Image 1 (cartoon, rainbow, N blue to C red):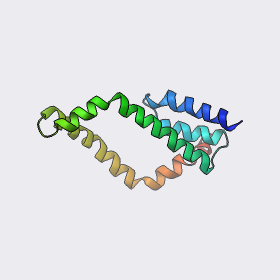
Image 2 (tube, one colour; image 1 turned 135 degrees about the vertical axis):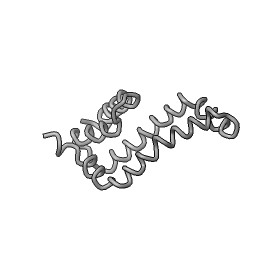
Image 3 (cartoon, rainbow, N blue to C red; image 1 turned 45 degrees about the vertical axis):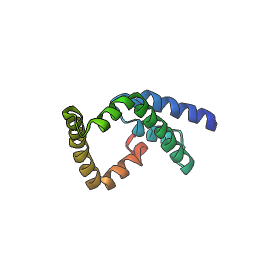
Image 4 (cartoon, one colour; image 1 turned 45 degrees about the horizontal axis):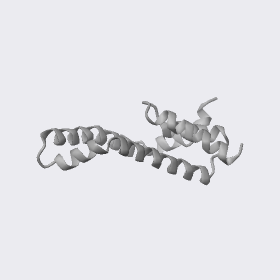
Length: 115
């Protein structure tokens, strides 16, 4: 398949999975491997396309982010939101740090588990 068609297909996968409760990164990695695209060019493409997805989330939630940031010194709701985000992030960060080798081994070889 041509690079343009591969790019379109990966873009569709990213767009369909970004706002669903599934891993858009995981779907992109599997799609890359199934399409036979595991070289550095496609890894860079995945990073760039996900940067665009992150920017879209920031654009959608910009007002919420700003209200929380500005309200931290004075708003109990903003502080509670920040605490809730940290409470969700810290366990994930700890488990991620402890299991990074296993996670990378599993994520970077997704097609070996599809048989």
